[in-house]
Image (cartoon, rainbow, N blue to C red; front, side, top):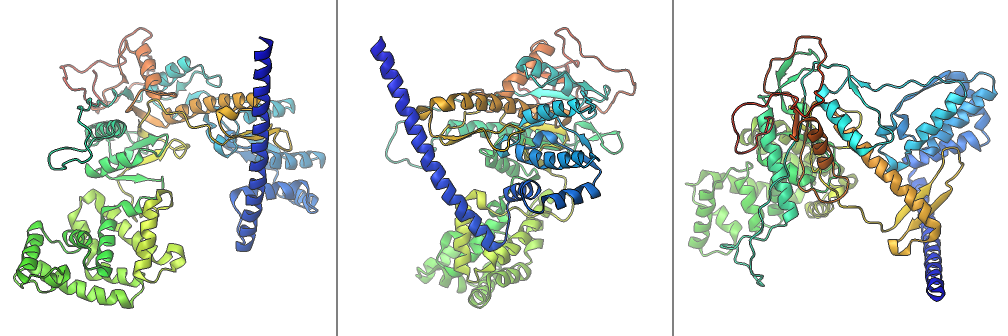
Length: 627
């Protein structure tokens, strides 16, 4: 037994040494990388956000001008208001503390008013600490500050708050206190949809090749589940818009729901493209602040195909797409006639058969004439000027406006303008030749994180809004739909940074990099445990932020119930506690009859549905109706 214990100690000692050597190499490489990065920024005369923070700290705490700067701040500002304090990181607090201490020592301390909610601290990835709020609160109270709390919300309707209270009563969030709704008469609804059903895939024999004419491709079950959830979403939006009634934020009166009343929330962008494609196919207008997406637009794909056909006339796929697009408006019959003409001329050259098309086909004859002019201009003009010429000569704005639904016309118009601007601004406009410009576009299409943003319509549009939970902080909407709220796959632990920086400390007390769980050193164990605890708290904070974006309606859907951090399961369990195991709570939003009495409504404590279930059986669950 003693030998085995000694071997275990030696084995752990070796892991500690390997982790130490790994961190030495990481810090050596990191230091060299940061030095080079700083040199590049100095050469370009730019600062990033981290530079602004630590340069401000350096100026106020250790520079020769610190006393002068602190005196100027004291003379100009007598009162300081800090909002969203839960998002403050230790370095930012140190900057402020230096100023406050200097003003106190000068005999005229500045007035400080701090506002924050530790339950909404969800920016740990950029250094924010929920615990900083409590420590600063205690410190200020020791100095005589008044501490006020508020657990009554003016935003959310009673059903949303009841579901929130029941959910967090189960989750045992240490920072949560029971909430109350200020407006107890406002109608509302919380509904958890069943998991998107996915049929079991039929067993197919694995063969080296598949006949695409009679054998469908094998679909990824995970992707198929998200596609089914997206279909649920489309069905729900169609059921809401024009049929449900929500309270107008300006008039306080009920009105039919619009697309712009709906906010979709996702935790990650991983499956966002599936939801967007489904919305686009259903002709539901949407706006996203998640960045990128310009090159994925149908109209932009048509333009890229047109540009490719100008430099390579034998690119048949690009030429066919351009001809079939609103740029020329050719039909399948026109393309068949073009192919027959090519065979009649015994010419393998596709461009030759188009130029020599019989004049009886007016569409292709006009297309050949335009393409001939554009091919000549492609050699003479920069990309921006060529695109501008194509847009105006072909009247593309009007053509696309006539070929897409009215609700999407403004977005298409904005994307065409954004693509024209991209041709002038991409890499500083240093791609004057068309081939190089197309090569750069192909590179951007392969790296979605670098894709340019979609165009912003000049006029306000009635569109569904899509945000991440982090991006939605501070926003609200009459109807909020939590997508992909099921269990999440735990993130990998490779190259995880462990940083412990107490609020009052000048520097982190622990900073190391964890390579893998197999290389976890004993001197990292406590830091990792505290980091995991903070991550769990932040996950609960994210759920709180997501649920409290809803003013009247909260919809919850998921594609899977496997994994950790299952919001779908926790909210469904909370509703079961309140509504006798039903998956919805609140009012029938299809009714325009809003309560007119000021008498507060109370949620039944017994297992009784919050609202009467609509009569009539529904073989298929319908969104917004009792089940």
